[in-house]
Image (cartoon, rainbow, N blue to C red; front, top):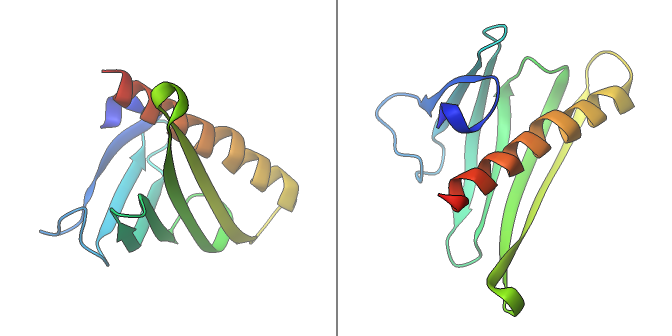
Length: 120
């Protein structure tokens, strides 16, 4: 949902595809500048509580971006451990600045949105 992630204007699956279908492409646009991001679903495993995707188009200076998420239930306290990883090449600018930007702005915002969604 666009309201859960700051600066997200819209998000949706392209065409008539379904979000759980492998190969589907999700399209995001940013509110602040209209920046476009398109990602391709590579795997989705309910039994492993995991997914992987790659980015096809990004406003960030990255190429060969591959990422994944995995959620592991923790029996003590009824909580869940969430892991989100990414590997990518930086196409321009200092690599550490881009890595920090993705960590601070993409991952932190994503985890905050997941937390808001689950708190409902």
